[in-house]
Length: 252
Image (cartoon, rainbow, N blue to C red; front, side):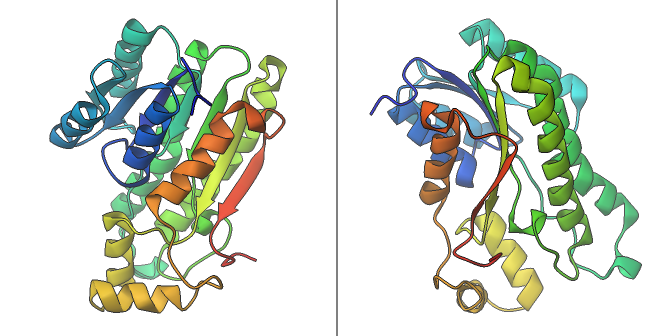
């Protein structure tokens, strides 16, 4: 299992959920990882699990450009480069109709998803060698709309526009840029969204969403990590400017 042998990946939101599952898989496949997140305790726990020789962590809010610049510099000092940038940090925003949606929450949601991904590209790409890969976690919400989620849906669509621009700009260096669009995935982040949307318990909300998915169940973080691995590895050398859905048929 050496599809990423001796490669280096930067992963935001790396302390939990999809980010943490991806970090585990990348290390298993031979990579070193630099994790950026908000929860220092969980980051340290993840680095301990992965092994200090292969993992480094930095606490940073991706919406804060100076914090991202410092975090990227720390990773470059340790590893020298990033073959893969995985922009995965996110928040859910608010659940409310547009007329009641708080403007500051809307702005913060865009800042984390869209501005955050922009910061990772802006400060990470100069350290990516030719032929590298950039992956941005969008969502099924980046392909279709949902009532009550204007901040999240707008932010996830914005990431697609950023991806398409970056893919064109970086094509001369053979750096491919893609967005990943998971459907409902079994993480605490998703649980919170589903419970707020339905007003039900976690089990009831999960069952309701299972009923909306043609394949009948949620993704697991490990399944999404496998898709990230595909986009990071050499098998996807001709895949760029692509929005990859992993949603059990919800957006079909």
